[in-house]
Length: 113
Length: 393
Figure (cartoon, rainbow over the protein chains, first blue to last red):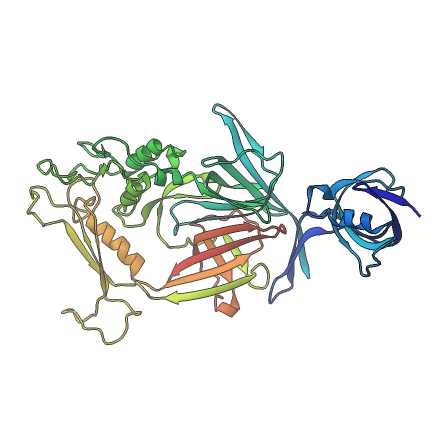
């Protein structure tokens, strides 16, 4: 299980269910009443990643949950799964079941600037 | 399906530094822009949406800016707008700034004559309209190419430039103290009709900040500059036919003829042009002695110094202006609006053809005159041009 670190919190980064998204500013317009279309390529979007992590405690969960939207949301994500440490922005932290104490499973969303 | 895949580009540049050592620096935070040009606005305008980036150059009032955008394939990255940032508009959430930009001609609208008592643009022997316009543009600091600012070439003011005995009323060819330069230019433009009444000189701003003064009539040329086809390159289109404002008689009044002194003299040079042919008139109007009904309009300017074109003097004639205005007014105006994803270097005054069976435009010789143009590149990189065209019918 690869251990990762972000924002001073160490957690398990679960590769199962990890989803990378690479999108672009692409506009597709089909001309009405005809057989022509225009596809405008307006440049790439940032690489996004959605991944489940497992933190060791409720306190770690609270630390990460306080980061999105603040200056602390940008940091270095260090993980053997990533290879070299990468700059990442934590967009959101979500969990579906609250245990209260002990390890927590969280769904997180990241963007790589 | 014939699909055109293209790359769209938006580059917003800010002129930095102190003259003569100035440099264009790109504002990489710009993500969307719209610019508009046309004869229904006094100067070109643009709106640029930006977000905060650390490397962005400082932008403030009167920052000189340039907007390059376009599609490849297409016209490519070309300068569409040049002007100034006036005013700034910022929002906190999301952190976004809207830069309202106005073209170089806006300077003439902003700058007012500071000469005490005003400036006599005609002088004692008269001065051509283009020379007067160029003098105002120069005073206002509007960049232009002299060859692009044309005119009738007549010695305006050589017959009547005010009454020296009336010290209370300013002469017609005076640029008044405190008057914006563009107001003075527009006063000259509205009467700058050559003897053949083939058009009227109008000062306007087109793409890339170029200021022109050319002879215009809302008549398209025989060959279109650009053609569009429904089902191929037209996103939406509509046409409106409106007789509002039409008329078949025009009375033009000018200045007092020589020898008539003010105050007390109300006689002016004048000419009436009319046409019995006016199929758009509502039925049941009272008829004139010649048996035809007339709906007239009146135009007056003290800058017009003679009645007939054949009258002596190289000055503007009521007759030419009346004939020009009659040709413009004695018709129903078709207004055609449509938008296209195509990237061509369109500009006001061009002749446009649209082939649209749905709108009933199937005549290949039926063209339109481009009155207003809006170019948009939105936050998703989508490039669109919206055209508003008119045609007399």
